[in-house]
Each structure stands twice: as structure tokens, then as C-alpha cells.
Amino acid sequence: MEDENQNQSGMKRRTFIKAAAAAGVLAAGGAALWQIGAFRRLQENATRQFPGVLYTERLRQIVTQDPSRTRMLMWELTLPAEEDLTVELRVQGADETNVHHFPASNDRFIDDEIEVYQYRAEVNHLTPGTHYQYRITSEDAATDWQTLCAPAADETYKMLIFPDTQSSDNYADWKEMAHLAWARNTDAALFACMGDLVDNGEDRLQWTDFFGGVEEMQRVIPMAPLMGNHETYDLNWKERLPEAYLHYFATPPNASTEFDRYYYSFDYGDVHYIALCTQQREIGAFKDGLVAEQLEWIRRDMRAHRKKWNVVLMHKDVLQYRIHGRPERTEGIDDDNGRVWMPVFDELGIDVVFSAHLHTYRNRGHIYGFQKTPDKKGPLYILTGVAGNVRYPNLWIDHPFDEVTLPQPETDNYLTMDVGRDAIEIACFLPDGREMDRVKVTKR
Ligand SMILES: [Fe+2]
Ligand SMILES: [Fe+2]
Image (tube, rainbow, N blue to C red; front, side):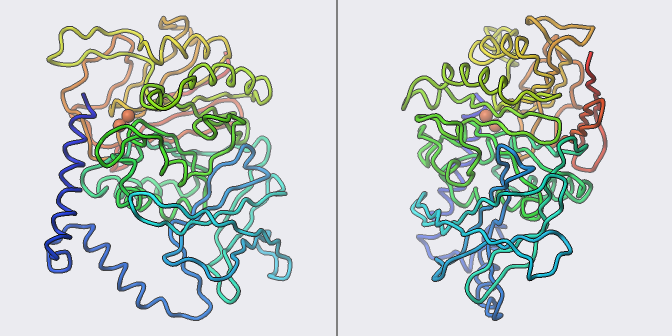
């Protein structure tokens, strides 16, 4: 249901862009934000003549399996590089003669009929607990130095978590909230985006708008991205494989032949994170076995990587909510994801499960054996909310498991997760910084 609404709004924008381009009115046209952005980019390109300066776009850090020792760096150029590109890495404060070099590989791809001049390099041999600086260099030019922190094994830290960012307003609300969240939390160590990063997974303009929200933060702290169902939609709103998503995010490999990087896991400090792929319905039209493969993998993964805290990130939710005006729809446990995953989370002793997709914030407390547990047995289930302008006012009917819901109709929200020595503390904020919920998880 939600997808139909979004499709209409997304389609309108694209149709408008195509019509405007055909009429040749782009430069003279109205004041739509993206037009101003495109014009500015043209102007910037004209002034990018300073010798010795390498201009990159969307320079970003992506989590690796062990961010205390390695980091994935990705970026784009407006034109293909004529020389080899290198990442230079130094310990913060060290002089420029003590620099490690990592060659970049060409990661160019074409999608939405646009060629993206993308590059990547993985830096390794980091020492846990060390602050570094990195920059991208070509033969005779370099970017500014950026910070890169390798966490200590038992590091206490803060993570930012952003729910669905898909938008129909050129990502204006998302950009504003993401910038405010970052301004208030520049001490965050990493951030997660919970899927449906864009409304249409093939639309290049939407991707550049999405990245516009995290431009500053993704240069200096790593992102843990999730794939949502909207990453599997093509320009005609038909399902396809999540090609753009997989190109933009070189997340950790999972040794799968069919579904490499669809799902992954990583560690950060005392937490092991499991990023599941819940798009078996969308992907199922192309290949089978996503759920069965993840069920085997998660047990193997937890045997090898269990940490003091174990946290699941999944796009689609585990509960089913009733919907206003649809009396036939019952509430309970979601068949596709809840029935499949909740018993596994119980079995594996998962501490917290973050989900998204419904565009509403709900803290459901702890659930074990499909039942609420007042003694906090079982994982804490947080439905993370909405971070774009696609909202569903008056759609969902409260679930008896809900403990905290945001005032309706909802605006946007973001979350912080503080990982301390003895507790994990999760808080939910409105764009203006007002704290709406706070919950602490301790070992029972
Ligand atoms: Fe969504
Ligand atoms: Fe979704």
C-alpha cells in the first residue's frame, strides 16, 4: 500500500524532469531545488581550476567486517581519472613523510543511462584505537586530509541511525534533518541507514540527493547501509536486482555466490552487527534461496563473531500492524519476516533489533517466543521511524506490543545508540532535537 503512494509521487517528479528537459526549459525554468543544485555544480566545475587540488564527489567511508583494522573508501569524479589514484594514510599528527599508500581501483558503472566515474580503495593494517587522516591523490593533485578513526576493541561510542530516507521533495527534509543530526552529534563514530535510501533505486538524481544529506558525515565516519525494497525498483517501478545499491556500497563480502553483499555483518567495539536482507519477495522474481541462505549464514556468523552485544539491522519489520480502512487486515506477527527471524533471534541471544519500512517510530520493548516479556527477556525491538518526507499519516493502528509511539501525524526522526561499558542506550529525536524516547538495554 505504502509503495503505491510513493510511486506516484516519484513518477511525477521524473516525468517532470523529462518533460522539462525536452522543452529545453531547464536553465530558464522555475526554482526547483535540484535545478539550482545542477546549475551550481556547473558553476563549481568552471571554477575547479586550482592546481594541486583534486575534487572528488561523494567521498565516503563504508564499514568493513572489522573497522578497527580496515576501511572501505569510495568516491566519484566528474570526469574519468587520467592517472592512477591513490589513498594516502597517516597517523593523525604524523608528518607527511610517514604515509602509507593504497592503490585505488576503478569502480565505474552505468545505471539510469549515466556513467558514474567511481573509485574505491580498502585501507588495511590499521591499529585499533588509533586516529588517522587520509586523502585521495593523483599524480599532481590531492584532496584535503580527512579523519578516519580505527576503534579500540572495547571502545565506547555513539552511533547515529536513520530510518527510511526515500523522498519526493528532492530530499530537502532528509538533508535538513541529517545535517542537524550530524551537527548535534559530531562525536558519533558511525551511522546506519535503514533501507529505502531512495524512493526509486534506479534514479541517479535521487541517489545524489540521498548522499547530499550525509556528505560531511560520510567522509569522516563509516556508513552501514541497508538495502530496502525501494532499492529494487527500476524507473518503471518494476522490480529489478538492486544494481545501483550494490555499486554504491561495497559492504563486506559474505561468501555467497548468489547474494554477495545483499546481507553482511561487521563489528564495532563490543558490538557485532548483522545487516539482513528482507527483500525475498522482490528478489525472488530473479533468484531463490535468500532466506534459507541467510538462516544458515546467521548461525555460522554468530558462532564466529559473537560479541558482548549483538544487534540486528533489518529493513522490513517483524510485526504486522492493522491499517485504517482495511478491516480484513489483522495484527500480530509478520509472516514473511517475523515468523522466520524472531525465533532465530531468541535462539541466538540477539540484544536489539532495529527495523524500518513502515515509516513510523515504535518502541515495542522486549519480545521472546512471540510474547511480550516484562522481565526484558528476548531482544528489544525498535521500529526506527521515517527520515524522508514520505509519511503515512493516519495509516497504522497501534499494535498492543507498542510501548512508545511518536505524536501523530509524525514528522521525521533519527536515533542515537550509545554503546557503554555496561549498557546500550537508544534515544529517538525529532529534527529540532527534542528527545522523544530513551531506552536502556543491560545484560540480564
Ligand atoms: Fe520505505
Ligand atoms: Fe520499505
